[in-house]
Length: 254
Length: 300
Image 1 (cartoon, chains in turn orange, cyan):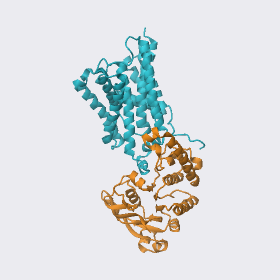
Image 2 (cartoon, helix red, strand yellow; image 1 turned 120 degrees about the vertical axis):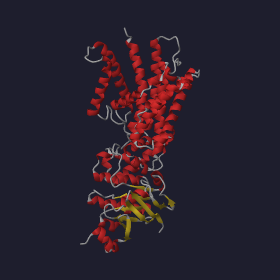
Image 3 (cartoon, helix red, strand yellow; image 1 turned 90 degrees about the vertical axis):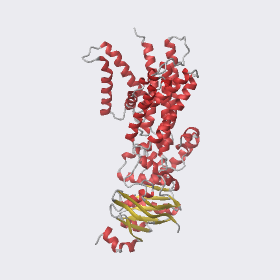
Image 4 (cartoon, one colour; image 1 turned 180 degrees about the vertical axis):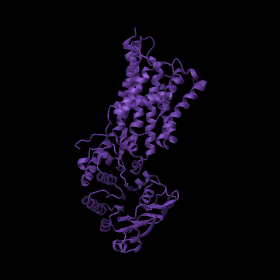
């Protein structure tokens, strides 16, 4: 299987703290890969560096064979890599529907020229996008909230909306930072089932930070374990659970 | 006896001029979240560009067009370094920019020097009586304001308007959703500056003389007050805010002649507007009108 995301000795430090230390990982195209590790192990920083929110100190990252570690966020999005945030970063004073529409790819009306001179085109496009957005909202149980301001949603709904917003952008690969944190167990399964379905239907690749080991093991192909900025193990369910290092730093004795 | 009709016509001309300024600030701050404390700079650039050209003999419309273009370009130029800054520094930089332009104009004699430019040709033909001239001016500013309103209205109800609101809410999230936020900020800054430029160009020909000291930083803050009163991110509110502020200002000027106060009556205007702003900040910080929504979608 081809590798869609490759990092090569990626390093990022904040002052004296090396948050991501020589991380080299590969994510297979069309796979669902999990990323676990104790709090402060550098998972989110790794996501930030890959998605362009932070600049790496050294090392390289490739997406689809193209180097992305020096690109700004919006070009990484254009390449097809879209992320969500651990603490949802929604547009609080905009409606749920507008939050979805802003993420759509190839908008005619999001430039000034398009706004003024291609009115008919963007209005037509808008109607199609609204349908698509409502379908996604329906799937995420957010349809009834479509006209509400995003800032008035509950914590779990915010996570769902952020996932929906990422799906709206027709990505090739999604980086999901704890997509199921604060979401009720029924919906957690629903989210992950949806992820499996999306992978099957659109060959999307998922790279997911998640703390629920059982969930991860039942839905992911492979799990990467980070500790203190470094990758300490990777593999499939059983072998990881029995790995003494993983038990030591993450799972604990039982 | 003061001619009350002329007084009111003149007041509405100023509501138009300041309404455009407050509309342009609302596009920058209300919708995009850009802190511009130097609105007066672009107002001044528009007034001077148009004033200089028309006194040199160019037709008024050339002066207006040049005022719009030069202000817009100035906005674009300052936005290139400035918009990379955090919002508070952007505020400081724009404030200083206005003062720099004013001091340059005050010291360069070929640009008028401290006395400024006099005898700017007006858009009204000479020989008209004052009231008719005022009516023509009022019609002209209404048309200009309507054009600015149309442009702003189109912007805020389009996908582009959604992106600028996104930048205001969360710039990083907007960038990770594929928007080149810098380009959006620079373009909205230029458009708003161009609007301020046309307001300046209009004011120049209306008053027929401009001088650097007409463009104190106070003007920028006046425009901020109008935005606060009318409502953030509401384009109708921009004009409403201008109307309220100017009525207050003018009203205080009249009222002081009829009141016996234990204070210097000339300060009455400042006391009243200050009080008005305080009341708003405490009880209605979002302003009178609430934010314009992007679009109402059919059947949703």
